[in-house]
Length: 251
Image (tube, rainbow, N blue to C red; front, side, top):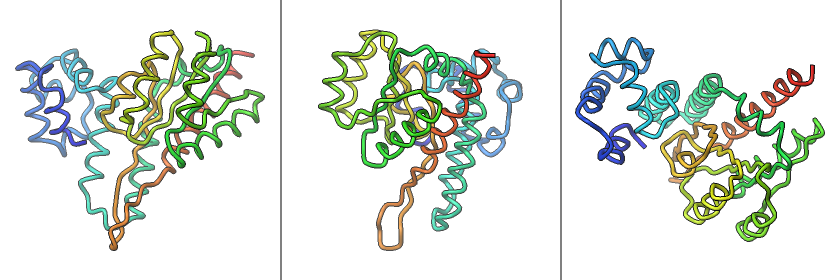
């Protein structure tokens, strides 16, 4: 989703000041992608707090995540004929986004969890879930994989408020997932989403979100090419941050 599409999606929430800032960004994208929040505030004649509120209205956790989105959008605007360059760009943006994310609240929930469940919404997502299960098992932290929607519904009934659910979804907009997420929210069960770096329903509903930048490209014969390496990186980063958090706690 482009910035223009984001603006259209959230248009009803935006005021005149928001539109003024967005007009400046749209007219100066190349410059704004490298600006800090204070620089953008000065250049657009707005306050730091108003820009922060604007990024929230657009569905981001804050300015850092919005800035990563602008960089990702720039990569998507480039020629996707070089498939290796697309992959390289996605990995770089994913790593930048992970570096800007505060993992401590997520790791605290995992550290104190009664049980940890992980659900992948497709075949590739389940592969990432299995890798997460393998990694955490190395640290004697055991993760239960949920394999399909029927199993998810059955396990929901037995989940407790101190459990944590990790949900891996490429789009974050799988319709069948929304009722399950609503049930988790209603029952006070913490969940973490790992989705593509774009505005999506699952990330908006999640108390905690990790984004992996995955761009769609096409082969010359028209087949879609989508890499899940950024998702694997996100899972690996979560695991390594968890180790650091637990070691600090148990000193």
